[in-house]
Image (cartoon, rainbow, N blue to C red; front, side):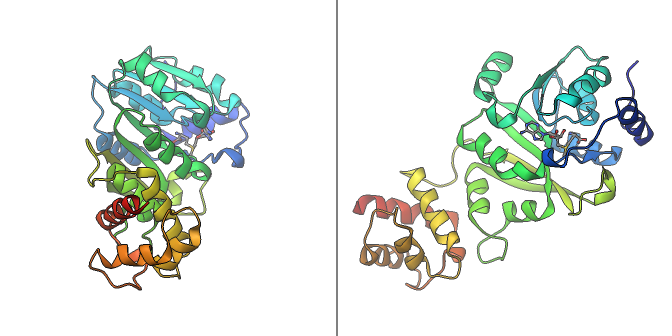
Length: 289
Ligand code: SAM
């Protein structure tokens, strides 16, 4: 019988057995709290029909839980030193494949096709914080078929994902996440639930993918260019931010006219605009060009 890693002393024992050294560059903070693991599994709503992708299994603590609840699990881990450990800690389970790869270089569309006939999967992870945004945006922008993404992230990132217009946390990440999914905070998680302890607070957030985008956008790339341009220059008005960007196909006068046509003041800042208003503005600017 393989070691039950929901018991923290077993985590220490396995790390010692393999003489494992934590790699800061891989964002390695392993979960050692079984209550948090229960909350993640519950929020992800895993059942016997699910194919689950776990990003960064570490020593396999959450993977053991996933294997018990899901039909099949694929766990993608970058650190070669963790692979022999995972082979041992997951040896009781026949429904898991350990994939030694960088998640950012893994063809996930192919994986979903191969393992789940292309049907939507569930994604669960205690993410490496140094690449949270590229991982999440990669999943969305590459249209990886997924019902939901339930992840541990830095608390501050969870706040930004759910932020509403006008708040200090509202920005390009809020709009991008909310365009693709509905964010729900599941739990705040203090540093003492990890080994080693991170020096930031963490939170579990569930992102439930929209079946269809919540707003109608004719040119997604233009809308996201406009969003980035307005938040890159937060202190400027929306009109100046868009005009200075150099990649918005409209003159300053056309931008100003389009902003006014939304029924908002000409000197409004990007941080006050809703997703619907960014979508409407990008549709107007597209028709100018
Ligand atoms: N899931 C484990 C847990 O909760 O205890 C470990 C979580 S730890 C925060 C992040 C994990 O992601 C580490 O195992 C790390 O080696 C792995 N990782 C980091 N960068 C990665 C990448 N680019 N691709 C795949 N795994 C990565």
